[in-house]
Length: 441
Image (cartoon, rainbow, N blue to C red; front, side, top):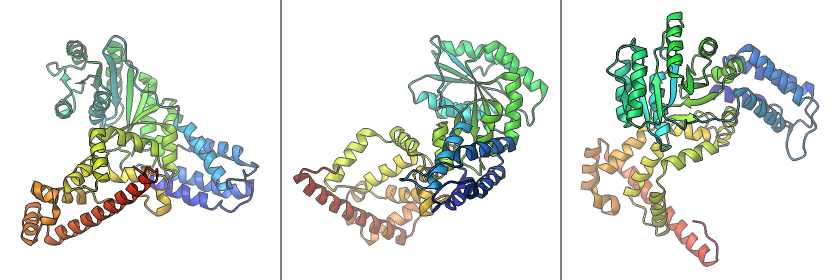
């Protein structure tokens, strides 16, 4: 996410290190380079201009605090300005006392509206609510079928399928949502390849009928200023309540995220960072600013872990680690829990300081996880619990069953035995410390 912009900003700010005082001379060149980096990331030129002017005004002549360097002070100023540009603190969907809360999803065709509807339903579902989906897109071939399939995958009902016109679909969807005791009705609307008056009038009629509590404009995060221009038109006609940026897991340069709020005055509420149903994040400006500057986002990483990790299972694993009884069965469970948290590349980006170790943009071969899982699945339960019994003939059988080579099996077993040995040593060390009154686990 914003890898190229992050690298450029880090490179620029390194040049300020070693200065004793922030002056107009030693920041002018750096901020000119920052402005160039923002424009190359497709940030709106007025936003970039105002951003640099504000940073310059706050930075020039500031005395260096003894405990930090001028570069650190500049980073703090830029971080604060980025946070301001990106918007207000996250505001979640406010549920109505008398359900359902109605959420309209609007935007251009191809922006990812339908997929986002399912992700939003999953997000609401995980918070103990009962979302219901509906599609008012009667123009795009298979649009309604797509939503039906997505709804089935997350066990969320899709209603209004027996109507053929958007207004009729909206009416029936409200009735069916109430009948199903749904908390939130999410309505996917039709998009076009470009804005046209017919589409906008239809959306205005739906808004008039539904009186939705939220209207989310979905923008493709990879389209830069095109997304900003479209958002401006939708704001004028619909006055939507929030923005959703999709495809931020791709080659997003950052222009849309840094411009769209400043230009439209509307808050970014959610971002979509992958293809899976759980690949949705609430938008926190301060956390996004931290990511853009390469400082990671440890809070979001912890939240992902809390959502994905089974607490009871984690406690059982801790007990096994105390007794040094870690098996391949446990190893497989840990791989599955890590996969639930999402892309490993995204998790690496959230860890502070990764850029300093050259891991920014590090390509993780997630196929290796699948390969390891296939090998473990090809083992018998006895072999998983006691890998020492895996002799030559067993290794050949496991290799054939998992589509791997015997060398792959040997490599995994060696790594596993080394890990077991390390866990045993840590457990002994921990036991000794506990005797001394120190607890590590």
